[in-house]
Length: 440
Image (tube, rainbow, N blue to C red; front, top):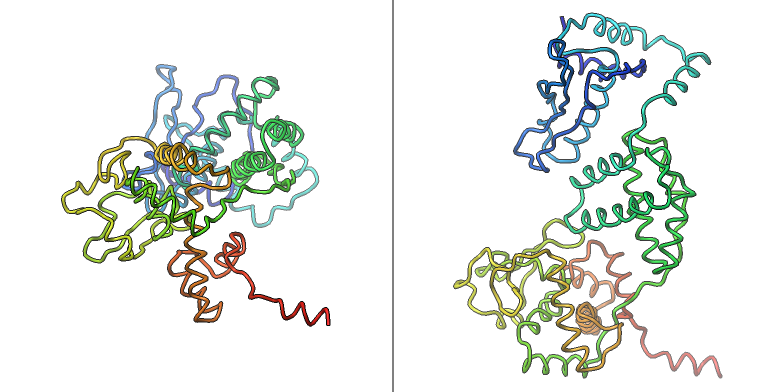
């Protein structure tokens, strides 16, 4: 007799797709995945409850692990557990019971595997499959989105998943208010989503509308990939043209005046800006830094970058001499902690970035009457522009870009060239003589 693991594995391998009628009173709970909150050192599994024949109550049965815990990354482990869950649900619908003899279930699975290679899809079979598919129970809309968000949690970073959660929560709240009749995920349509996105566009901007579309499409794609819905209809909703806000570069005079002002009024913010200016870090990357991320011996800094999990950069002498004695500080402390260098600051990453953004706005921007186009990010643009123009004076553009790419941390030459174009760092030489020749 096959044991429980063999039944699930056998059914999974044979891709057993027949559906059977559900009993009026279900004898089992829908199988769920336990992912240990993403901790790969713990065992992940699929679990469910089954109605005990003696007590008549649902009782948790032994979880199913299979080979899931042999996978060493979150995405692969979750993927195999999703397949186990789907297969387990099929055999439960078949009549499997952990408290009874399952010979009939075994025979059906074995029979299906033996005949699958020769069985033809006749019109009658296709029609039956279509009918069974239509009659299959659909997942509640909130449960479907929760499932997809949990999947995404294993793949994307904390900041991204927070953005996903906020946008999906707002979308579901809108659905509940405007379309309370939609109970299951199959009730959601392209038209309804289009109306929601149009509302975002009217209240905010094309860019924000596109951001919502991107998040919804990414989540719904998970549902398609896991066969919870037939297709990702959001991909058919067009992206609107939008002009992103761009941080302008500072003039030499303005940059020097800002540094002089901060030297007198806010040295912590000045050092924060110098990490952006001299090390070409993004503001949120500076906010992530802890004392232990600074290698005192090698004079390097390690940080989580936008385009990679971990990057290492040298700290130039110009910046190194600005740092205090880090050996006296707690390695676990934040490098920038409100009004001090080195200290505890227990708050979310976005809150830290917002703190320094507002500090810059209320101090520097107010003092120098800077417009919306100038911000902390402008210092990164300013110094990359300065560095590139200095390099290209004594070398070819390609050679200058090759050296610059190592310093800025761009992932490719194409990415760097696009960035330089966007900030107008790459300008042509004076073409007055050509204009004269045209006039002549």
